[in-house]
Length: 434
Image 1: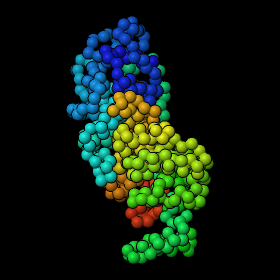
Image 2 (image 1 turned 180 degrees about the vertical axis):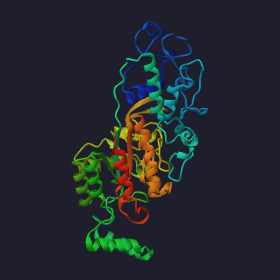
Image 3 (image 1 turned 120 degrees about the vertical axis):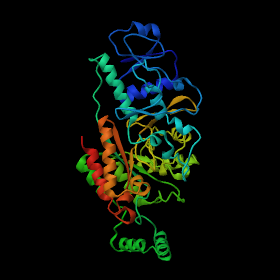
Image 4 (image 1 turned 90 degrees about the horizontal axis):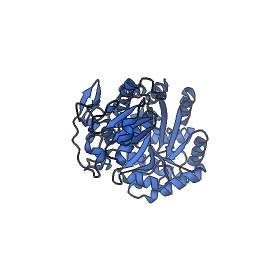
């Protein structure tokens, strides 16, 4: 157990300690008063105060963890041994930076509660983040800071046992549109064909005719996904969009027997979750409706989710999920940039800054999305693979969890996605390696 002394108590401090020690380093901790702290011998101790106390690692506190409000923070980033740090405090401390405050700033997504710069879909812009603006969005800084602290503790207590950590990989798949043509009624199929003809989209018309003649749906890429899963023994998780049709919600109808059979078949061997619609972010009742649809089809209680379009506003989106009995969410990542939105590659609990308390929701950050690589960054397949390799290398260095996000439609080998199946295959191969 790690013992911590602080002059003051706060929910923010306890939360930061929990993320660092319990979630990243897998060790227990205890906050103790000064009298008990001084008397402790033969145990790892951290003095989180301005006092000078012998036989302990010292970290001088930044005010952040003892504030009650949300305010602009001055972030000055300095690099040491290729790792960025901020919240510089006393030079007399074991660490010149307040790691606890920095961890809290990153994982609570503190900056997303401040006046925001939003993109066209009213999402927090990756380019506005401290990590992007200081060139460390591609580094899991929280995990690296945790390992720096671990190294310091081992210098004072060489025989202290830290449990071995293991790199993990989760291959997550968003099923926005399960099939391009399959499962649609004749009227909808013919209407789409006429629209393709009228708008001059002859490649789409050709695909429809191919499907009509040979029943080969371009979005039916599940065999490829399942073959790779079996080959590399990966853990796959699927998120299904069961929305009412709208501008940004163009899923196959939840009433489709074809879609229902797909969900039931996939659920036999993989966890499934709800993909709350674009419209759900402003109409919370839709989450409840869509979740119940999936529960009825899968005959299973649904507790996992990822927002469609990664549309998320803090803390409202997460509180809406909690009120609908969602316990795990996989939305924490950016659409326009790859990397570590919360600076971490470990699952961790949600902290509501407005309530100043931890909430019953586990956040699973993802790092790489197909649409980011192709549509936002406009990378070639070769460039995309290089980016993926770099991200995975950072995660393996800290024995974290790599979570990728792909879509079945991105494996269709048509249009802008031609040549991208090999990227997906390479990703799974790279991610699988231990």
